[in-house]
Length: 267
Image 1 (cartoon, helix red, strand yellow):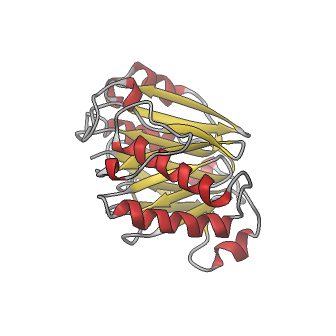
Image 2 (cartoon, rainbow, N blue to C red; image 1 turned 90 degrees about the vertical axis):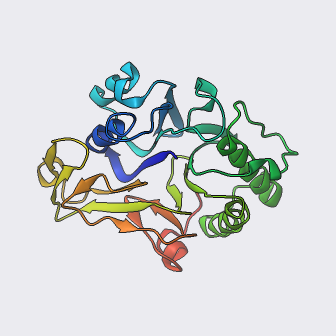
């Protein structure tokens, strides 16, 4: 199946170090050769790049590795096709508008998504189970909350209910963001690492590259990286529990009931 990479930061930050290892899993150090994509936010706007070529040989991926892209929220995906042809329309992440914001979604898993009825304004462009499930999620969120954007606590609760419904149809690991924070749901495998003071050194698993984050960051920087599998050694990657939904904002994770207490605002 596919692999996911997400980043949430309290300031504009680069994901180039993590992306360097992640891209190599797209056909060089792993089997995810069926396309790749990345989305990142600039304020309320987003940039979306797709390529049906393997990430490890994609000229577009090579360009992304060298661009000084900085954002607070980034979602990337490398694909191993289970449903849908290897073509541009089926490359993740997918984007749709809801409540006046662009919502970006990427999925790892395999779903009987045809059992999820689509009756609203959200329709797939491609033929993946992933895009179908994403459209269903937004349809049900709009049906539940109407045109008014809910606060984080209400949205978190609604997503948890949808996750249980959709995950009953297969594996449902995903990343979701509208540019203000990052939702991450685990069905089978997902990890996160928080990079904050005191910063450590880290070495990529997929290539011979090592950095000292203490030399690259300020004392008040805080960055969370989420991935299907750990990307580095020398760092403490925390595994999600099966069925767990985590929300990251400001480069940190507020577990369990402390979510609304720490954030206490709408996205």
